[in-house]
Amino acid sequence: MGLCEKAEGLFTQPQKHNSKKMKLNLKIWREGGQYKKGQFVNYQLDNVSEHMSFLEMLDVLNEQLIAKKEEPVSFEHDCREGICGTCDMVINGHPHGPNAGTTACQLHMRFFKDGDTVTIEPFRAKAFPVIKDLVVDRSAFDRIIQAGGYISVNTGQAQDGNAIPIEKGTASRSMDAAACIGCGACVAACPNASAMLFVSAKVTHLATLPQGEVEAKRRARNMVKQMDEEGFGFCSNIGACEAECPKEISVENIAILNSEYLSAAFTGGKE
Image (cartoon, rainbow, N blue to C red; front, top):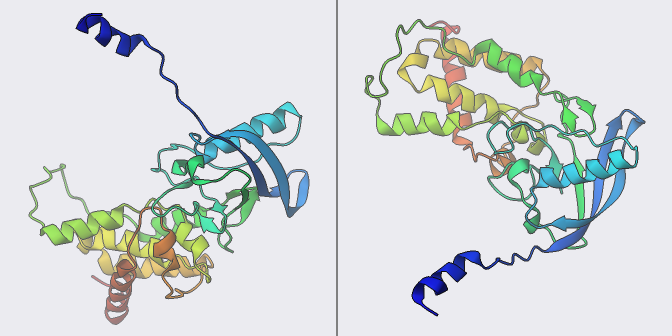
């Protein structure tokens, strides 16, 4: 056999991909619909591929429930690429699952074992009321953003990225804070259901850049006020928010928020 024939064989021979299958015991919180009182319901799911994402596994479960004319499990999802933050659920006691820096949609079944019991429940917080099953109302975050998480200064026509000189460390700090996707994992992880990490990320993101400095004090005051009105708790200072954050937002931002808020308090929130 010539070299060309050997090379051709490499591309024409079918490749075998062995996919490990597993059986899982799912313990899922059901609330709403036929489940008037919230409760855990057990399901057994067979032939789960290790290559599935966690949400794809739930899709398979729902297909089976629909085929049996049972009510499917409600859960949120959108991009399924770890960008939007809507796949908010607690998996085995961890918001978004046990893998660090990972959203639920990017958690794959290869991290589970055959026969595992997987407990799935919604984010627990007074400010995040359960709508149905694993879906919670996170509109409190939207109202916090509306209170001050924006820049209203007229900056004119958009400038090139390098038109305003910004020190590298400052720009990096702002970009790191801007990575927050507002999923609410920090609230679910905190024993006091505090939203300090979320608010501090939004404040740091804007306050450290020249365009956001103009409204910095007013922003910190208004966003903290709205956070308190929504019923979020005080910071517990144990760092669970940072540990469970899928974007690994640093608690150092909370120190920046405290500094901005105290500055606003001393000046009456005026610029």
